Length: 318
Image 1 (cartoon, rainbow, N blue to C red):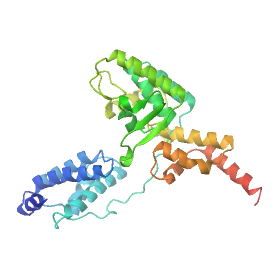
Image 2 (image 1 turned 180 degrees about the horizontal axis):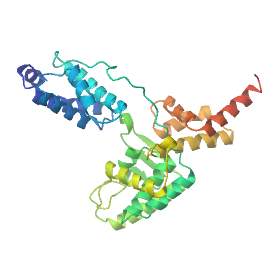
Image 3 (image 1 turned 90 degrees about the vertical axis):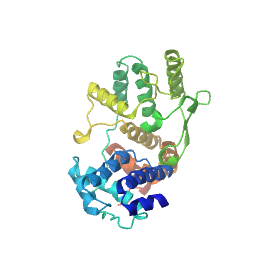
């Protein structure tokens, strides 16, 4: 830390900021934050300062960098927010640092409206996945199917190792998920059978795997996030699935669909949904049950069932 302050004071600003970026990202990730875009963004910002001959971070330079790149207003605001958090950290090392105001790029955060996949949609995706080449015709049906029936985050499934799946007990261990938390996910017997079948084919295809990952790529390595997103785009196009108001369906929408279908099932069964909601929240890995309430507004059918339940409790009162 002393060396960092001396470097800043002595003028070696780029060397100091490069190291400060690494230190800052290490600190944030140790606290459980998933900041995947920050590496690229902050490295680009430091390079921008260098090209402009800036000796320290200024609000004007941060705004200029955030807005000169392409993307939507929301994306530009997120870039600036990333720099603002970083500037707050650097200011503890160099008091000359200016922290950009949070309203320099005004925008309104809007929830992405999810595509709620029907059982038919999921079957279509799985059918398309089975048409992929090579071993991917085994991996992607198992991968997409697991997301559909558990509501797991795609990143959680990508991080699964072999020993995280207990086929005898029918449990998955999700390690170091969002905010660094881990949890156990009980599985239905049909899901266990499907994962065991995939694991058998995987081990036959790769008797000496290059990775401990549960889901393997064509090369026998862990699936890469970028390749998974590209493959899902291919599957979506093959099945002709469209999103609401032209929005592209996402892999993450399988999580939304699982949550909504679970809630719909509870309402139809007449159970106390409010009492069970913390169970669903825990299963999904939400830190706070309030995060799960977002799904209550995700579909008109769910809102209608909730309204019927309320009307019944009120006994027809005006």
